[in-house]
Length: 389
Image (cartoon, rainbow, N blue to C red):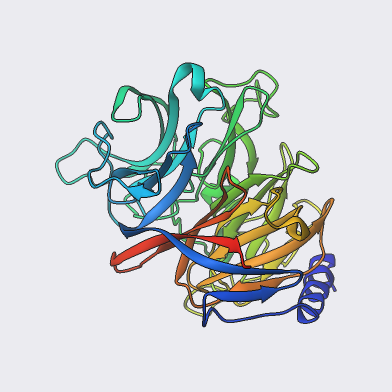
């Protein structure tokens, strides 16, 4: 029996001792906190990411290629001009938004996007990182500072989360671009080949260059931006403020979604190891775990299509400090996981019929913000959790 299986089973049992509730009304009790779900902005199309300026303005990306602003609690009617062209098909488009830690002095914001090829039908796409100045009204000095070696005709698994480490670096996730996993050739899968960026987490300097102390710098045949590898579709990434560790969530196929503690130079196994099966019901993996590869700290079977990831350290919900929050797309749920150091102690479904949860963030006010997605592109909203009276 694997250590991951024991850990995951323990988490489910502990979660059963908590409270799992459906979102049937605005007030929900969960552990020591009662909270309300309050709409922040509505009429959004595929909101993908959120961040805040120092003045409290909230930035929201819409996957079709728009950057929106919520100012003084009101969604500005017009998108921000200056967003570069995106390949808005499948899971691609305008993805992450991240405000530079020193925005007050430099006005810089970072965005990731599905970059289209230059041919007329945009047959291929990859993940690109863009930096621009934002004066509160428009983007200027827009420059691409990194292009992933992950070109593909598929429309999915772009990855695209961004995390500043507070030491002058930026982590960026790249998906495996839906390269098909075949059991007979899993070790030759692009996510196991470090000569490309498919299925990796990267560590970059803030200008897009390579830090000299990255784990594979100077090694022949390995791209120097790579921090970790063997990932499938990493759509959540966050630093635990208690420990400083980087964590990540990624989709499995039919089962096997993962919450991973990210170590430099480590291989996270996709598709050689894992807990899921292929969409046609066939086996993919050679084993659930391997001594050669990192195993997840928590996993989901069946899959909930894990997306956004956040660690809470605010004052509004003191009982949840140090807990991880994970969004589920197909599972349409918000999950809370108490974390102690490197161990996940439980799992609780906080909301389970709000919709497809794409992103989760702690706002500067200490409330928890949730971006709700729609597979069909129907108008959706951003909400926040507030303590109930």
